Length: 354
Image (cartoon, rainbow, N blue to C red):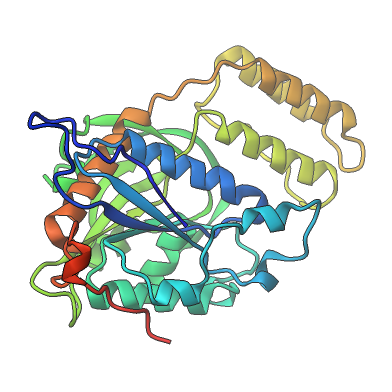
């Protein structure tokens, strides 16, 4: 299913007519059924906020099959998949760029994940045909492992919070206009070593002293990609997150611990809340015990409802995605799939090999 993200008319002088066709972006949404619509909305809002003179059309896909999504519970799965294409639909798609989301891990290692075979095929297809792609969180870890054998490292505790990141002096166009410092949400159990990424030919765009590598990039070009290289942007953080997402994840993880579904009591997200709210959450957390958590959960949810969240990273996120859309519009997708090609030109995007 496709819907315009940006208005279909150009606001520049000259009559407000469409100056070119839409940029077609495939959102490969691999989150759980309960999180799919939220993730979709986050990326729609981010693309809508990104500066772009061209309309952007979003095509929706997921790499998970129905078995991975699990049985329907209270109608969640049924509604989550509506409008989403399968991997078979993606094979025949015509895209100018892609965004591939992460997913909650369900296996000890990446190659054991149910989505691994489809994910690695998607990586190979994007490389071969020069499709500009944003790889987010677990998808970034999987792509780097598949491309260069760089393995993620498990962290002692889940990394969750809003961390200050510093822009590296690379001068890369994807970071054009970004400030020297900003704070970005991170939420993950694993991380990629900076030294290994640099040795593998990746350019580090931003990093944090506490959270490690934030964003990194590599230009790739395969045999069928035409004259230009396609930018692969990898995000270990989550610039697409809304202001309250880290809190909602914390409540979710706390409930799992209280219900006995997780052995780890989650940490309060770092550098995220004001001192009073953080202290209140820590006091509520101190009384958490598996099987005896109704009062703890209710207190935590009440604190969460009282917080006034801010969205201080939104402008930086929109600038980064605006730069990425500009690189897509410049023709990075492939020589025979230039952005805005008219239907009469029948610019056929390459199909994902079976």
